[in-house]
Image 1: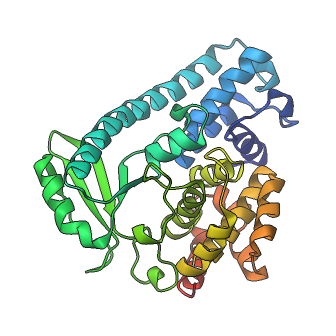
Image 2: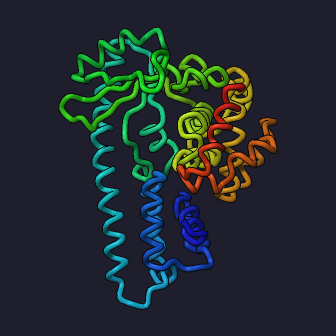
Image 3: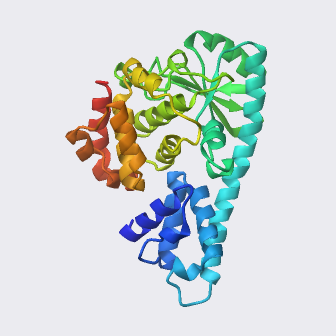
Length: 336
């Protein structure tokens, strides 16, 4: 990915983007195509497409793309992007309907639970929920409720997956597929950190989260969930979880209880996850609020962490040269 494509990606992936903040260099048509592909991979395609159309409407494509020919090529590229977006939006609608069924059944059986990531982040962190898509439903439950969860999921016509994954036992989640629609996937977590080895240093359970009056994650818990998910599950290989963190720090879900969060970081071992997440968001999106927030919490990245995980590592996705860096960071996470 070229520097100009990355500049446009970071500009357009940011919710609340203003068309007055264009990168100085325009995109060539083939670079626009690269931008769309990368946005799709990073999970920020809805924001990018929305901001592209907003920018084109407010000004002109000629401010974005250096194209002397007709706009036909641009139309083909943007239509392809819209097609991909619609497919993912259709899946999200299906997942939302299934989520409601599951929540109703869990409530009927009095199973404690909270919806994490996915629709919760979409509705609480973004001005329009379609700006944040998801590919499955994620639910966090107490470990003691897993037997009841199994009975509930079977009653809703879900089949369990082979959940051993990399580990023979003690994996922190159980996957389910709806019989009527195999693409409709649900992940039930008893710990936000799936890996037993990383859980030696970082562990976030249902009982350790702060809930609001509706029994859902508080704004502080949303930030904690987003940071731990980005660090332990993805090792910061995508922009979408970092945009979630950006929105949480901006207060989109509400005011963050910093006193509770400071204590929760000690209880869960998540200080490293949050400090690195805030550092990367600040550098990638030029958001000073992240640095201020990090200082108020009294957490900061070490020199080693800043060398291991740079903004370039995030943008390069799963580049082979960065695999060692991520391996080192996972070892650090195991230490808390």
